[in-house]
Image (spheres, rainbow, N blue to C red):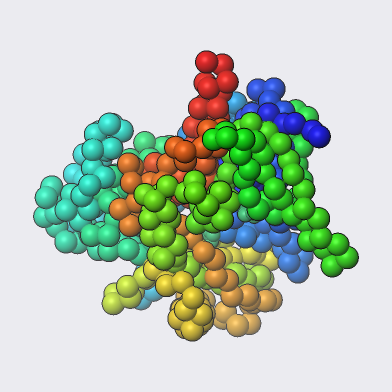
Length: 448
Ligand SMILES: Cc1cc2nc3c(=O)[nH]c(=O)nc-3n(C[C@H](O)[C@H](O)[C@H](O)COP(=O)(O)OP(=O)(O)OC[C@H]3O[C@@H](n4cnc5c(N)ncnc54)[C@H](O)[C@@H]3O)c2cc1C
């Protein structure tokens, strides 16, 4: 029976980060992943000669996301292209690009208030921001500036996913904005190999440091020795056989979706308070909606040669669209003479409403035809995409002290990591920071 120091459940960015950091520090690590590929929601797959990102289309700046620290501490190598400027807007009527925050778009009065807001948020420190988790972003903005135009503008910024500002906690709002303002570049993208380059470089670190990775294996349950973690039960299911396997370690890091935690824990060990928070997350699931397409490069000719990512909307629309062209960062993602494009709709989309999803995708295709009058002649293929997202956490008052957190107090040796566990924000930055924080705690405990 092989005993590990740490078992990590789930090989998304959080699980890979934890396993890479711990294996680098000399821990004997086993990483278990239910899918055949690593990376979870941050990876890429091949399709018709293109390399298509599964979820994430860009990486938050290396400094604000914690990725820079993760790469430095693990020695992982990732070459990235900084994307700047990142907040461009395309006006459907005038067909002009402008900064999303330009005075021409805002009008002078709104622009001046926006600048005052930016100055105030840039000067804030994290302690001050952490004091704002109990009120909504709407209250904060209206108390300080009294300008409803600002509420409307922030509703249409990516990080807030189309949510009205009364649903976003002021703590989440201020942290997201502060991160963006203090970073030199807001987003970047791997220079080669799509988003998959990130899981790939972390996998290398784990294997080089004698960590073990098993894919195609579903972890089912935690088992304990008294109130202490002892290992996990996992299953392999193939057409020709079914196997149940036990793996042993005194420390387990769970990074699979938090909503599945009740199934992973022994029945009597699920704290009621955490169960309530998880139910709130489960019932508020949203989809991101979009289309991905392979296009001839001529589609973009005379259009935007430089903007990796830009937004569009139209008055009266309660959501906005984002166009991402990752082939501007890495032309190898598409066959020569072609571009890969994602067109996403950012706005709440209730879980399980395939009819609404389909309607939104049709609207996106109609808007794409407005953006590019020769759209149909220039497209090689088009696919519809729906993906689950945890972005609404920031909008459910589930930030700061209200997040489920890193521990199940009743169980020693069990840690939780992943984007939904980190105190603030959402997305890859939260996943990476949760990994860094979790490893710091494990290391402190081990060396105490
Ligand atoms: C469409 C889309 C667009 C996005 N865009 C952005 C963006 O632009 N910027 C940004 O910062 N973030 C973005 N995100 C969010 C970002 O991708 C995630 O926050 C991040 O990848 C989460 O990482 P994670 O490790 O916490 O979770 P995951 O990536 O979900 O990893 C969990 C892993 O656990 C595995 N697993 C689950 N159950 C089991 C089990 N029982 N046994 C073993 N393994 C299991 C899963 O297969 C998965 O690999 C986007 C997400 C989506 C879906």
